[in-house]
Image (cartoon, rainbow, N blue to C red; front, top):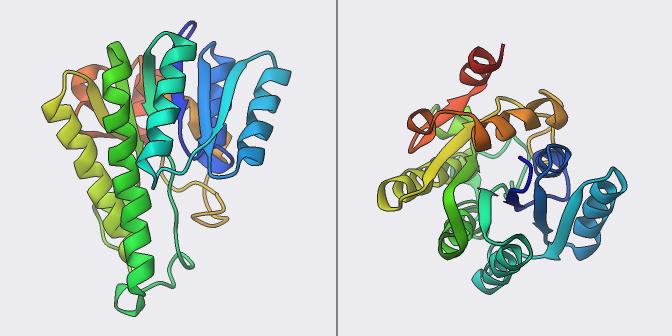
Amino acid sequence: MNDLTAVVTGASRGIGAAIAHEFADRGAHVVLCARSAEDADAVADDIESAGGAATAMRADVRDEYDVERLLETASRVGGGIDVVVANAGVYHGTPGETPIQDESYSGFDDHLRTNVRGVFATLSEAVPHLNEGARLLVPTGKIARDAKPGIGSYAVSKAAAEAVARQFAADTDYVAGCVDPGQVATDLSGPGGRDPADVAPMFAWAATECPAEDLAGKVVGLREWKTATR
């Protein structure tokens, strides 16, 4: 990933932070954001302390003007953008304990505003700044395609986020697709699953080596990654 510019939203912790570190370790200049400037700066400082290149910004993906500034900054510092990981997301409640019929309207709305509209804003604002061959990646999970009790509108939002990625693949000249790392232990999804650092290389593979025809408008997962890299 030498000389590539990568944007990672929701990069203050979990999968987003792990992806930012992985990309930087592979030579990319990572432009990362989080709702907290302090948290974003901490990740960027860690990356730079390890010899990588990072630019941190405070941005809330629910605010398209924040997102616009993020992508404009990334393009300016990196000479265009090569990879976007629309990772920012929220979960209101406890996984497995939020049946959809019991959800509040405000929780449902914010799941869609952050996890769907936020993905749309990130990809949409990136398009004018993308370099030739750029890739747009949306993290996803099995619950987007296989309903599971107690996941509620978070699952709805992940299904819609996959649809956003598919439509960008259909309507633009760029490779846009979804990456399903399986169950990962994060603050959002809970303690069960793989360490985020263990699945971050999968996103680097999707950003650079995964055949375009396997990713564009589709979902690549652990099986495809392990088959390709074993």
